[in-house]
Image (cartoon, rainbow, N blue to C red):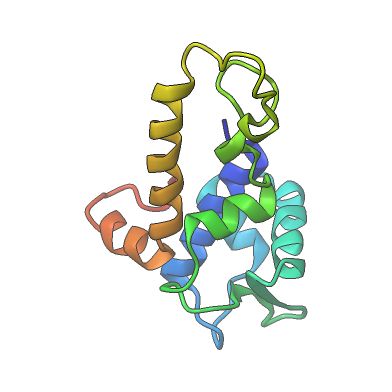
Length: 147
Protein backbone atom coordinates (compact mmCIF):
# COMPACT_ATOMS: atom_id res chain seq x y z
CA UNK A 1 0.00 0.00 0.00
CA UNK A 2 1.02 3.59 -0.51
CA UNK A 3 1.99 5.63 2.53
CA UNK A 4 -0.15 8.58 3.63
CA UNK A 5 2.78 10.83 2.71
CA UNK A 6 2.65 9.46 -0.82
CA UNK A 7 -1.13 9.85 -1.05
CA UNK A 8 -0.84 13.48 0.09
CA UNK A 9 1.93 14.06 -2.47
CA UNK A 10 -0.24 12.60 -5.22
CA UNK A 11 -3.20 14.76 -4.21
CA UNK A 12 -1.04 17.89 -4.05
CA UNK A 13 0.58 17.31 -7.44
CA UNK A 14 -2.76 16.54 -9.06
CA UNK A 15 -4.06 19.79 -7.57
CA UNK A 16 -1.01 21.76 -8.76
CA UNK A 17 -1.24 20.12 -12.17
CA UNK A 18 -4.77 21.39 -12.44
CA UNK A 19 -4.43 24.89 -10.97
CA UNK A 20 -0.84 26.15 -11.04
CA UNK A 21 1.39 27.55 -13.73
CA UNK A 22 5.10 28.34 -13.56
CA UNK A 23 4.26 32.05 -13.50
CA UNK A 24 1.29 31.62 -11.15
CA UNK A 25 2.35 29.61 -8.13
CA UNK A 26 0.00 28.56 -5.37
CA UNK A 27 0.80 29.13 -1.70
CA UNK A 28 0.95 26.33 0.86
CA UNK A 29 -1.95 27.73 2.91
CA UNK A 30 -4.31 27.64 -0.06
CA UNK A 31 -3.25 24.15 -1.11
CA UNK A 32 -3.61 22.82 2.46
CA UNK A 33 -7.01 24.49 2.88
CA UNK A 34 -8.38 23.29 -0.46
CA UNK A 35 -7.15 19.72 0.13
CA UNK A 36 -8.06 19.77 3.84
CA UNK A 37 -4.53 18.78 4.89
CA UNK A 38 -2.19 19.90 7.68
CA UNK A 39 -0.14 22.82 6.37
CA UNK A 40 3.12 21.94 8.22
CA UNK A 41 2.99 18.28 7.10
CA UNK A 42 2.11 19.21 3.52
CA UNK A 43 4.89 21.81 3.49
CA UNK A 44 7.48 19.14 4.34
CA UNK A 45 6.15 16.87 1.61
CA UNK A 46 6.21 19.63 -1.01
CA UNK A 47 9.72 20.75 -0.05
CA UNK A 48 10.88 17.15 -0.55
CA UNK A 49 9.26 17.19 -4.01
CA UNK A 50 11.14 20.42 -4.78
CA UNK A 51 14.40 18.59 -3.91
CA UNK A 52 13.24 15.71 -6.13
CA UNK A 53 12.80 18.20 -9.03
CA UNK A 54 9.06 17.59 -9.38
CA UNK A 55 8.08 21.03 -8.04
CA UNK A 56 9.30 24.61 -8.19
CA UNK A 57 9.09 26.80 -5.11
CA UNK A 58 9.35 30.53 -4.56
CA UNK A 59 9.35 32.30 -1.20
CA UNK A 60 7.71 35.60 -0.46
CA UNK A 61 4.27 37.22 -0.74
CA UNK A 62 3.76 36.04 -4.32
CA UNK A 63 5.54 32.75 -3.73
CA UNK A 64 4.25 29.24 -3.72
CA UNK A 65 4.53 26.00 -5.63
CA UNK A 66 4.18 24.96 -9.26
CA UNK A 67 5.07 21.86 -11.26
CA UNK A 68 8.69 21.75 -12.42
CA UNK A 69 7.64 20.08 -15.67
CA UNK A 70 4.59 20.07 -17.86
CA UNK A 71 1.75 17.93 -16.45
CA UNK A 72 2.00 15.74 -19.56
CA UNK A 73 5.50 14.71 -18.46
CA UNK A 74 4.90 13.80 -14.80
CA UNK A 75 3.50 10.33 -14.19
CA UNK A 76 2.10 8.71 -11.07
CA UNK A 77 5.20 6.46 -11.21
CA UNK A 78 7.47 9.52 -10.93
CA UNK A 79 5.68 10.69 -7.80
CA UNK A 80 5.29 7.34 -6.04
CA UNK A 81 8.86 6.19 -6.62
CA UNK A 82 10.30 9.51 -5.44
CA UNK A 83 8.21 9.49 -2.25
CA UNK A 84 7.85 5.79 -1.34
CA UNK A 85 10.45 4.10 -3.55
CA UNK A 86 9.79 1.15 -5.83
CA UNK A 87 8.92 -1.33 -3.07
CA UNK A 88 5.18 -1.02 -3.77
CA UNK A 89 5.90 -2.39 -7.25
CA UNK A 90 8.46 -5.05 -6.32
CA UNK A 91 7.52 -6.54 -2.94
CA UNK A 92 5.82 -9.89 -2.63
CA UNK A 93 2.18 -9.83 -1.56
CA UNK A 94 2.75 -12.29 1.30
CA UNK A 95 6.45 -12.12 2.11
CA UNK A 96 8.13 -8.99 3.42
CA UNK A 97 10.83 -9.19 0.75
CA UNK A 98 10.98 -8.19 -2.89
CA UNK A 99 10.33 -11.09 -5.27
CA UNK A 100 13.68 -10.38 -6.95
CA UNK A 101 15.50 -11.54 -3.78
CA UNK A 102 13.73 -14.92 -3.88
CA UNK A 103 15.96 -17.95 -3.40
CA UNK A 104 15.42 -20.02 -6.58
CA UNK A 105 15.98 -23.28 -4.65
CA UNK A 106 12.78 -22.58 -2.67
CA UNK A 107 9.22 -22.48 -3.98
CA UNK A 108 7.61 -19.15 -4.74
CA UNK A 109 4.75 -17.97 -2.53
CA UNK A 110 1.32 -19.42 -3.38
CA UNK A 111 0.03 -16.23 -5.03
CA UNK A 112 3.19 -15.24 -6.91
CA UNK A 113 2.03 -16.09 -10.44
CA UNK A 114 -1.33 -14.33 -10.09
CA UNK A 115 0.02 -11.33 -8.19
CA UNK A 116 3.00 -10.83 -10.51
CA UNK A 117 0.63 -10.36 -13.45
CA UNK A 118 -1.49 -7.88 -11.49
CA UNK A 119 1.59 -6.04 -10.20
CA UNK A 120 2.81 -5.63 -13.80
CA UNK A 121 -0.54 -4.13 -14.80
CA UNK A 122 -0.44 -1.76 -11.83
CA UNK A 123 3.14 -0.72 -12.64
CA UNK A 124 2.14 -0.04 -16.26
CA UNK A 125 -0.84 2.05 -15.11
CA UNK A 126 1.38 4.19 -12.85
CA UNK A 127 4.00 4.63 -15.60
CA UNK A 128 1.44 5.58 -18.26
CA UNK A 129 -0.86 7.85 -16.24
CA UNK A 130 0.20 11.48 -16.28
CA UNK A 131 -1.07 14.40 -14.23
CA UNK A 132 -2.64 15.87 -17.36
CA UNK A 133 -4.71 12.71 -17.91
CA UNK A 134 -5.95 12.89 -14.32
CA UNK A 135 -6.72 16.61 -14.67
CA UNK A 136 -8.88 15.92 -17.72
CA UNK A 137 -10.68 13.03 -16.00
CA UNK A 138 -11.22 14.91 -12.75
CA UNK A 139 -13.27 17.62 -14.47
CA UNK A 140 -16.14 15.12 -14.51
CA UNK A 141 -16.49 15.36 -10.73
CA UNK A 142 -18.12 18.14 -8.73
CA UNK A 143 -15.99 17.82 -5.59
CA UNK A 144 -12.67 18.48 -7.28
CA UNK A 145 -10.91 20.18 -4.41
CA UNK A 146 -11.39 17.45 -1.77
CA UNK A 147 -9.65 14.85 -4.00
